Structure formats: structure tokens, C-alpha cells
Amino acid sequence: MSEERRALERWSPDRWEGIPTPFLAVDRPTLERNITRTQAFCDDAGLRLRPHVKTHKMPEVARLQVEAGARGLTLATVGEAECFADAGFDDLLIAYPLWTTAAVAERLRRLLHKATVVLGIDSREGVDALVRHGLAAHPRLSLLVEVECGLRRTGVVPEDAGALAAYAVGEGITVDGAFTFPGHGYAVGASTAAAAAEARALTSAVESFAAAGLRCDVVSGGATPTYEATDTTIVTETRPGVYAFGDAQQVALGTAGVDDVALAVVATVVSAPARDRIVLDAGSKTLAADRPPYVDGHGLLVGVPSARIDRIWEHHGVVDVSAADPAVVPRVGDRVAVLPNHVCTAINLADRVHVHVHDGGEREMWSVAARGLNA
Image (cartoon, rainbow, N blue to C red; front, side):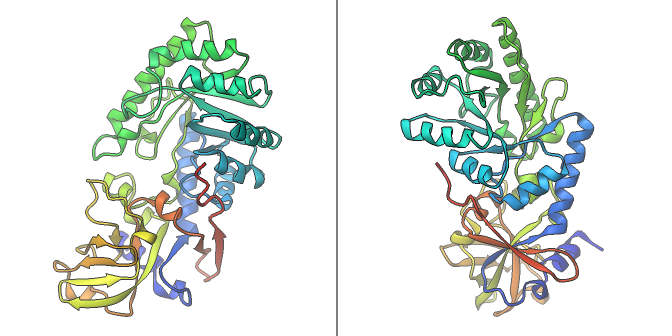
């Protein structure tokens, strides 16, 4: 059976009967297969897998990841950390250079009653803010120094990582190591070079720790397009997120096939005003607006490979079907499945996802518990 045929069966309207469109649908067997495959890769490579849960924002998915062998979670915000700590997860890395105010410090203190917390840091000012608000000596708090490896976003020059770590240690804060994000691997053919840049940056960071007389026990990197190219002679931990679900970006990058994507937007064709187009009831408020240059359109319409979702409004998705076989073009009233370009942003627009559990037809509904917790 072809990959396209398997995907069509997975997102068959019969599986999702009775649910008003548009909505997010999850195929749990595919989700579990993705989680198992990535965990096996990391185990074989000797990498600690600390998945980034900003992708899914759901404790149910995090439990599947931890049960498969993931050790700890990565988060983007204090709000996400609070959500997952409340759900019972107790090893949390907030991979972001937080600015600690009095209000943030109080939230961190409450969080530290429930979990061990590692914070990202890339400035002395960030260290000073933690000290100013009385968090320096907390036994469950530690830091990772963020270094820049080519994305040109946050992170110190790798050669300066040791000096920043030494400054934090001098202020009484535990520093476990260094981390980076090879986000420039999100481009066609760029994953191997980005992973190599990650390794170079982290090697320099480890050397700078040693020059400052410090150990660098945690050497953390990774993104979904790059983790399989990780240099395990230097990197000890990887933090991909999208791998659990996949999306149209990963298909375009070649890191996933259509059959590997575990989440789709189920929509209805509400209009077919001309032979060259159909219109879906899913727009930017469901699919999200992400459209990287290497993705053709605003998502992949399963079963109609020549179709192109070329324009979206809030509640309209206009699909160019001019190059498609008329025999497979959906008609008004038909339900279709769209693989969103960026699963993280699509999930953050939804309150819940509908989950196909197994071929017996059982369904569940999972809450997107950390939705909107962006601070």
C-alpha cells in the first residue's frame, strides 16, 4: 500500500464522524510509532532525549514520551513549566533566557516546590536578576549557558560561555553545562551542516568551561531536522519537539513522510465556486499562518497531491485544484484532511484534539492544557 493511500485511510471521514469541523485530529498509533522510533535512535546513540513540549502542550503526549524513555522535558515558558509540574512532571528545562522580575521569581519559587528546574541564561544581567530576587542558592535550581551556533538569535559567543558560567557560580548558582539550538537546520538540505555547527559551538563552550575551571556535564542541542545528525562525541542531550507529530514542514525537509504525520486538521469543503478552486472551512485560525519558503502553500491536502492551499483568511482556506485530477478533487460537503505546515502553532490555536486510539474505532479527547501559556 502506498504512503498516500495509508494516509488517506488514516484520515478517513468515517473515523471522525459526528465532530464539527474544523478540528485537530490525532492518530495515536502513528504518534506512538514516532515517539518509539526517536527514543530508540537516542538510546542507540547514547543521547539523553529531553523533548520540547511546546510542540504539543499536552501532558498525555509527554507521558507517552517519558514512558518510552525520555528523561525530563524542555519548555519555552514558566507557564508551560507550571502546567507540566501540576501534571506530575518533575525534571524541567526552560530553554529560554528568562528575565526574572519579582512576579516571575515568586512563580519560580512555587514551581521549585514541585520540580527540579533548569533555566537557560545568556547574560550577566540575567544572573544578577536571579540573585536580586533570592533564587541564587535554591537547591533545585540550576542553569545552562546558552550559546549561539548560527541561528543568530539568543546565546553568547561559545568562547564566552565559561566566563558567564564562572560568573554565575561565583554568585552561588549551580551551572550544569551549555546548550544551543540549531534552528537554521530548518531549510532544505541544511540539517547536516547545522548539526556540525552545533557541535563546533558546543565544543568551544566545553573548552571555555574547562578554561574557567568548570565542568560542563550537560551538553545539549537538537531540533527535529538535525537530531539524527548529532555529533555524539560532544553532545549528550537532544531536545527535538516536532518529531512526535510531524507536519508539512518536515515532509518538505525530508525528515518525515506523509505517512509519518500523526496530526491533521479535518475540514469541510464549503464552496467550489469555479473549476480551479475549492474552499475549506479552515483558515489561519486553525491551520495557523506559518508558510516557510520551502513549503508550497498553507499545508498538504491529503489525497490530492497536486492541490495547493494558496490563500487563507481567518476561516477560509482557498485550494488551487487547477492541476489536480478532477476525479479526486473533493466536492462541497466532503471532509478532507490537511497536514498543517507547523504543528506547534496549529496546536496552540486549539483547546482540544480528537484522538483515534486504535483500529477498533475508539476515540479520546485530549485538552491542550498549556495552550496560550506564553509567559
